[in-house]
Image (cartoon, rainbow, N blue to C red; front, side, top):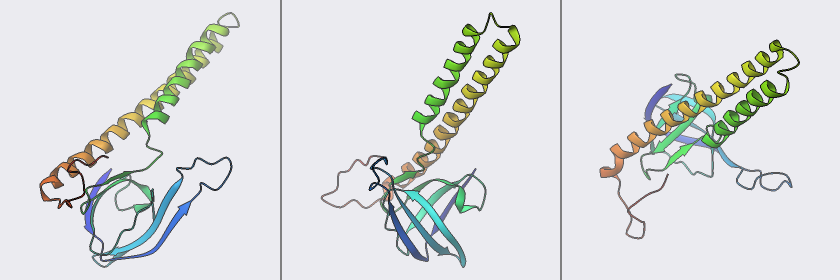
Length: 172
């Protein structure tokens, strides 16, 4: 994971995607794709959840899964507003669902097929352990990213200029 702070010299190709028009879709499926240049380097098609209007001159701190690869962005802190933006697929609820399914598979397959043979029970246990492990790894990664972004935001708090109408406390 890489934490990088930069200022957008230019922001272009901003596209807001709203997938809430489909019958099956969750109405919170809104994302923003944009391209930017910073220090002479251009990055294309960076996608973040939610509707955002980044402009030139905005300073951000981003957490990238792979160093230098903006397609693997996990989260971002906007230094102007202090807003934290994090990718939806790094959601602790989904990780706990994975843990729950893994635990169900582990116990269910172990109990149901104990009479069918010990190898089948061991296979169910192995699948359950893998699912629980994957969910825990995802949760630990999510907490680590949130911690990095909150630390970054807390460093910014004394420097943030709050408007008179704006509440002094900001939510994530």
